[in-house]
Amino acid sequence: MRLWQNLRTLPRELWILSTATLINRSGTMVLPFLALYLNKYLHYTIAEAGLALTIYGIAALVTAPLVGKLCDIISPLKVMKFSLLLSGILLFAFPFITNYWGIMGLTFVWSMLNESFRPANLVLISAYSAPEQRRIAFSLNRMAINLGMSIGPAVGGFLFVYDYSLIFYIDGAAHILSFIFLAVSALKMEIRKNEKGNIAGSSISAIEVKERRRRLIFFLLGMIPLFIAFFQMLSTYPLYLSNGLKLPESVYGLLFSLNTVMIIFIEVPLLNALASRSHIGLMRVGAVLIAVGFGAMAVTKTIPLLLATVVIWTFGEMIVFPTSAAYISELAPPEKRGQFMGYYQTANNIAFSLGPWLGTEVYEYAGSNYLWGGAFVLGILSAVLISYKVKVIKK
Image (tube, rainbow, N blue to C red):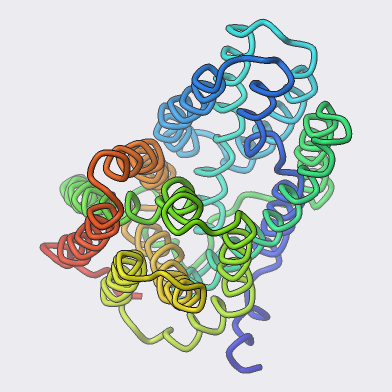
């Protein structure tokens, strides 16, 4: 139980944010089923249906840096509330639009509104937590995300068969309920006192801000290869299991569930146990674990070994993602935190856009050995790059 005790010390505001995230993610149904909806119910081609997800990704890519800067100008809490409310309302319009380009336009706008939530949420988690709490704070948020994602898509699958329009209404309702929860929680945006010395650049010169931005960009460029390797789990991973190993789709569900269960029950105790370790050192280890976990797929053919690879790269995921967010929150001057978090989300979005496409191209034209070997190389490359010329910010 001692490994969970740090959760008790987290400020009330972080629990409110995580609860809002859980409510929102528990209704996640539209995005996982959007392409299937366009193909099965509106009878557009697979390519036309897939374009909707591409448009969503492009809008998300554009949104992250813009919203990040916006969060430095106005309250990120207001940005989050408007994101939840407006994106929730917009979802109710989807079932009534059947024109293809009308749906594409609606998807673009919805993505911009929906994805505004992420940078604002990252800024708020940073603002409400002390530096030594941030790994656990970001981990609590990831726990809420994974709990919600274990509910929403599963329920959405049954609703989609019964009445496809319900996925839009329930997803939209979850957004609005999350907004209402934040509104009645009386959450306020305040900078913690322990950061008082850094507010408005009072102890950080313009030269230092420029240097931190340079280090941020170098760090994110180093992380993108790892993110590309990691996002194979959403694209080539299920394809390889089905087409390459001839396993039923239920096996992917089993492996995905193992990943989710590990995050929910192990991530917080793990980060508590590693609390004394430096950010960069942990991320280096996490990158190697992700590289080994996906690289081992080249020689993994049986379900027990597949389970072992999931365990390996999930440990890497549990280390890398909360630690990288914590590192950037400490690298950023408080008055530029929105901008820095926006860039962080942009790096994720770039990898999410490139990863599935690049992975499927390699898999189709070169084969699975090159795919998983390439994932290993990308992970190791990131482990090297994030260690090179990046000054560690003390916790």
